[in-house]
Image: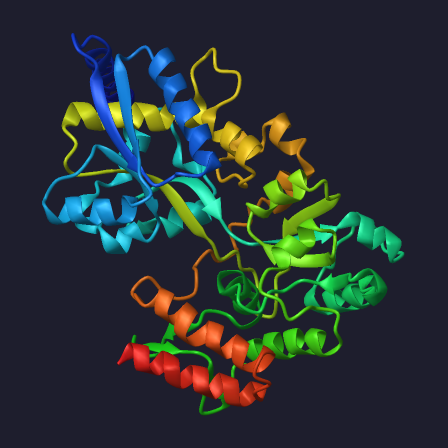
Amino acid sequence: MKKALSFILAAMMLLSIVSIGSAEAPVTVTFWNGWTGSDGDVLIEMVDEFNKTNPYNIHVEMDINADFQTKIAATFAADEGPTMILGAHSYKDTYPDYLIDMNEVFEKTALKSEDFVQGYLDLCSKNGILYVVPFQVTGRYMYWNKDLFEAAGLDPNTPPKDYDEWVEMAEKITNPDMNVYGSGVSYNAIYTNLQVIQRMGGLFVVHDSEGKLVPTFANADGVNPGYAKFLTWFKGMTDKEINPIEADTTSMFQAGQIGIMPDGAWASAGADAAGINYGVSQLPYGDAGAMNPCSVSGFSITKYASEEEKLAAMKFIEWWHNGFETTETTACLTWSLRCGFPGYYMPAINDARYQASEKLAMMTCTDNEASTTYMAPDDFVFTFQLASEVIEVMVEDVIIGGMDVEAALLKAEQGAEALLK
């Protein structure tokens, strides 16, 4: 019976492909996204390649728009939509009624869910429904200047294994005469600082025993020790003048003035252009345990796609990850190699060309035990306000204003509670 069912499913898939490929006119997949930067040029190249080489008579008509977020919100509000979009994993909460269950792509193409890092699929899913097939993982990483390490008598290939060692190495690297700082944590790069704070003290909002959302900056037992550790750690480095009180430490890193800093994958392009001899790896885990907080962008098919358009979009997503028999480098692998973002798809991660990149290999997290939850549970909808109005203010109160750490955390707790009322 199982063999018969497998044969029927395979035949249905083949018929679907044949029906697309034998269409008299191309099947058009309208594809909207907001990738307007230099990586958008790579995306255009990849879509052009698919349009020229696919045997299914599919044409992907892409619309890259800087106002994509506004445009898609207005379009959905008008009960309309394109075939496919590149959206954030948070779209599972923002637009669940407008997107199909992307688990279907594993039934109607050769893609297998087990080839994806499970933590990223979990981040893109809700109640068993996969709303987004990953395309890009955006996290924060630890960069270090190998030349400055070597000048300080440190092993240039061995970054700090924890945050205490970060301080120890930063002290050795700091050279006031050369305007060199061992550490480069920016006081107002809040979306980077969040990554370190969460690793030390856990999520900023959690469910209590009754399922109610509550903030975690302080409680009746005192302030969050992990968050206090971050603020004390950061303030200690600025007091010792081994970390500048500076907003743009990324530019300082590119100028060879910073030994160690946290930043996103995009920092690689600037460091490469500046000729910096650097290494990059995952940020160390902290007291909160195995954490890989990140955001994932990916492919979603809207409910407005016809059955034919839906199948065509799935064939594009399949091609993005697996290519065709004659494809030398899949689009998925190309995206990592050229744009510098770490992988989420094991066949690409295991490719020799990916592994040959020390930077990509060290940035890649395949630890399925590491939590990918970013800031708060899915049902907390004020992450932007929490970041900008509470956490960024908390950091600046301590680093710029000299506020006592405990007082800053109690103030943050009150600010977070106000968002939840």
